[in-house]
Length: 185
Image (cartoon, rainbow, N blue to C red; front, top):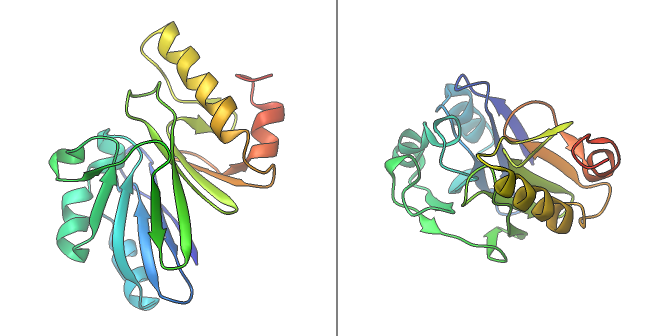
């Protein structure tokens, strides 16, 4: 089960992915804690046990404390204190399980030094590393090169039909972005 939410924090995306069998769920990014998130979790009888923060910018972690308070979920992030909250620090190659779903953490530094993506079979959550038709801003040419190299190596090596769910804007696929994103053509 999968659901997209558009938050009021800089029009940031938040996503819930849940295991159909166990009803365990993960929330990816929470720039603003929206009532629709609670309504969805309750309506679908989900156990939202984990929250993954792609990077510690307000439009991705601003609603984290409220989400933690409401769901009691464990937080995973590239930094130990996203949004000022305690988190389990994760790194490239780490595994996050949601019921029978296995997610792999992918490091894509550049937009921030600790920028992480989370890949599950058939989809990847890219935060502000990769957008439909663009990439996240960086602070230097070196950071930009690091980011583009990480995207090429770790995201574009995923199956072409893999859905890309970014931190802002519409979703896309690996096939579309690897072929048509102007930063890689």
